[in-house]
Image (tube, rainbow, N blue to C red; front, side, top):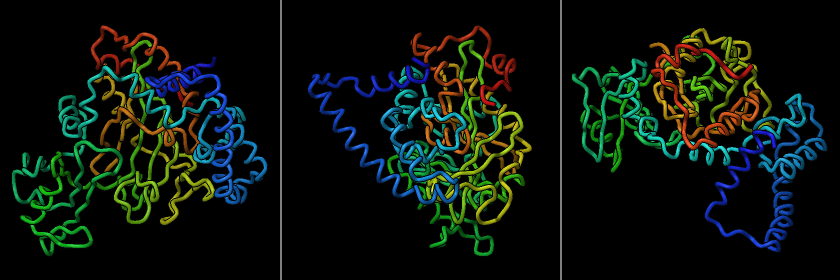
Length: 407
């Protein structure tokens, strides 16, 4: 009856809601089938990763297999989570019992915010307006296209003469994004395959919007701190904030995502990796990719620049920015913020109602259940809605702006 296992039971109930309750016979058959099917999954995952994990971490193949059995049959978790989150690196061998699976987290976050108006976080255009209202720096919107029509356009032609980044106003991860480099000699934009003049790029953006809304922003560059460790992709800090039972906003955890090669963003699964951020000092830890058999990284694989031990000089400002934004959304219990440190200064890129459980618990971070997430969720779940203080949002933020539950 630990808080985390209570939360996971709630997730299970949410997943089963509306389904017919199985008979005793059906449940028994399902248990037997689950053992067989999950054993097959364990073997598949183990065969792919065990050699590399033994080579990089010194964990024997037999221990990995036994750990996988405990993870899946006792912890009721997906076998790949054992490798994603490096359970074998946790000093407490029972740490897997504090893990909340990615699928479970999606259900929990949607449930706890089911009555909240999340438009500000779901729609990037609305988020831009929210940031402007509360004095939160965010990348500017140069142009906006909806249903093939231009709704927002730069005041002058010179404003187009920058690298462009286009993305749907409502999207998940990197779906639908595009990047266009401005070639000043040709006065045209290129995506590496074709060159388009001003009328053509506008026509392309209008067509790309389709029946949705497409926003166009200047493509930003990483700060001096982050430029050596993220190739061409804009490094992205995922900062998860929570509204504690007393109404104050706190930080649960933070992870920095970095890119390699020609990746446009730092959240492309095959071209990115991440590292935990120390919430007090802003110091980076060891970096990991999802594939544990590839080992961990202390330096960027291409630039060879140091990652582990590097400090984000603007971390206090970045953390405070996320806390202040959450304080102005009193209906939200948890938010996963994307905070960037650019050559123009720190900015809020977006906020996420639903954020990834694998990323949150990778790269040396504590299992989610060990951060205070479970206790906070149970508090609000029992009451059905947030308990808000009488203070204004800005006051709530100001009193405990830098309080954390991690480390």
